[in-house]
Image (cartoon, rainbow, N blue to C red; front, side, top):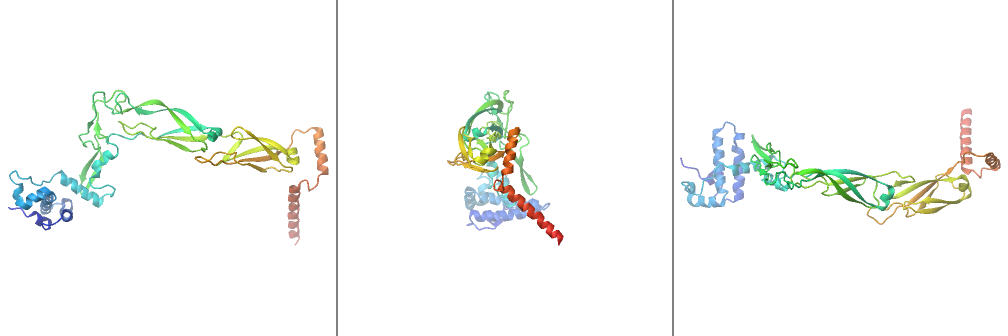
Length: 388
């Protein structure tokens, strides 16, 4: 029985472009695919016939030979007939990926995935965290800190390969070194982690005795950290590549240093501003005076307290707060005073306070006098309402 013309099988003319033939092939292949026609022997034959025709005409050299000699070009040791081989399986898999996949990879991209990830078996190391506590003074001025921590580093014996000296890993025969295997399940192509190498893409027959084949060992490392001036509580500093070393020569992870600032004896922080609560005597508050207050840079400054200062009065000292991170700006220092009530009075001190109280007027205590006057009016109003 003579073979049908390949152009006739695909339903295209001899002048058809590669794109025209590809469109025609896809349409016919989807129609006659065995999974869509279970038990239909005729559909299966047509499917193979369509594949054979396309495999020939999609190849420039084979198409030229076919146009010149017809089917005879592939008989008796000719150019080689188009078979039902891996190329077709890959092509069909790509077709179904395009139709039913997530569309994130171009056809055939799965086979290049291992190299895009840095090579099979080269797993990136984990990111690490280190908690560093510093004082508010260190946050103000900045600090060069040295820390020690145990982490995974590249095995010096095998240079990270995981294989014993004199040997080397071999590609996994199950996945061909890719780390993943593809299997057709009905109408779909499923890709999963290779069960033999567990996604590493390679096998180690003779593992390194120092690292047991992992390519890394645990060692204590000393690292230098530059804490910039103006850091705040909870800030995270990233040290690229200073995390855990990757498996079998894979890239290292990152180290994240989380900063916490110890509570300060005098200062409370709000962004770049500092607040200091300072007690003053009743006499200073009443008669005026000067108080000496600390500054975060270790110096001192004088604050003038005017006569009649009340508790919660706030004085601003410009430019004596915290520096703003990565900026030339500096916050302010706010002094909040509170008037301390005298304690453990002597007999004479009591007498003097009693004399002052007897001679004092509402002008000496305007706030309390005004408050209790309003209270009296409030209760008077309630009494008048009750009478009506």
